[in-house]
Amino acid sequence: MTLALPIDPEANRLLTRDPLALLIGMVLDQQVPMEKAFSSPYVLAQRLGHDLDAAELAGFDPEALVGVFAQPPALHRFPKAMAARVQEVCRVLVERYHGDAAQLWADPTDGGDLLGRLTALPGFGRQKAQIFLALLGKRFGVQPPGWREAAGHYGDAGAHRSVADVTDAESLRLVRDYKQQMKAAAKSGASGD
Image (cartoon, rainbow, N blue to C red; front, side, top):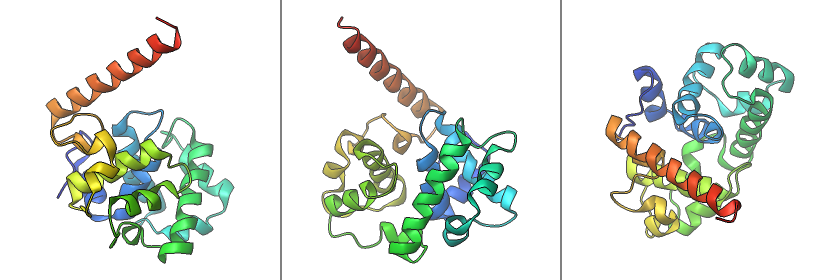
């Protein structure tokens, strides 16, 4: 399985071969375009000079990590907050999964179990966890029993709701259209229209 995001091909390859890079991309996927979020693990690895390592990131000096994130171009719109979030997630990986991100989704009993593991991560609310679960199921073949149901409407076949559904330029456009519709509906609901 591979990702087909409109980013540097090397960044896509890293996301495909490195579970930690994929997880960090999902951590960063908020308040920035998905292309920025999912290309930033590749830039982070380049800045560090080697593949990403959860134990190294967990133990990194926090201020130094902020510096790596903030170096132009910043890895995220909020480099300080996101450097801390990535570090928190890596600490959980080290404490619970021997520093191996793939162990997070290895052998879950079912989709609900995997969803529970994901929502236990710092910064992973239900929606983010469901999107990542859908990404794992649709793009990486991680399909424990009931995974689609646990992923909610993000797990629907043929949907265009999240990064899990991006396979080409057209599907990216459809995902963007969906997100715009959701924002407009939320804004309309908030204003009482």
